[in-house]
Amino acid sequence: MTPMAFLTDLRLALGGQPLIGSTANGSTKHMDQIATEIGYRFPAEFSRPFLRHYDVRPGTLRNLPDNAPGCVRPIPLCLPRTAAKPC
Image 1 (spheres, rainbow, N blue to C red):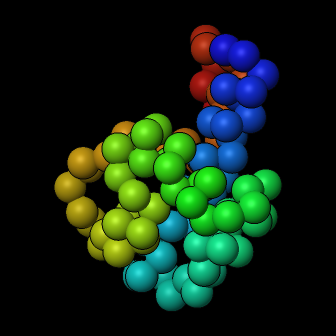
Image 2: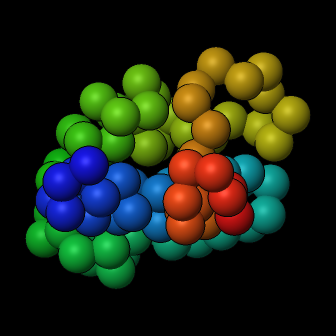
């Protein structure tokens, strides 16, 4: 994995965490704020790679209930240190 691919995976995982179950937990973070916090200047710069990587738009993921069927790739809570030792 290239350093840029690693950075992109990390940013997408970090950006996806506040979206999971956000309607249930009352999260009020706007997409602009999430994108800025993980290093993107605009929400679209976050949304496009997120859609390519997870096959779902960030806004759609935000609106899914916590118990929705698993139709998207899981967003890791942390990144594994090695392939043999997941976190």
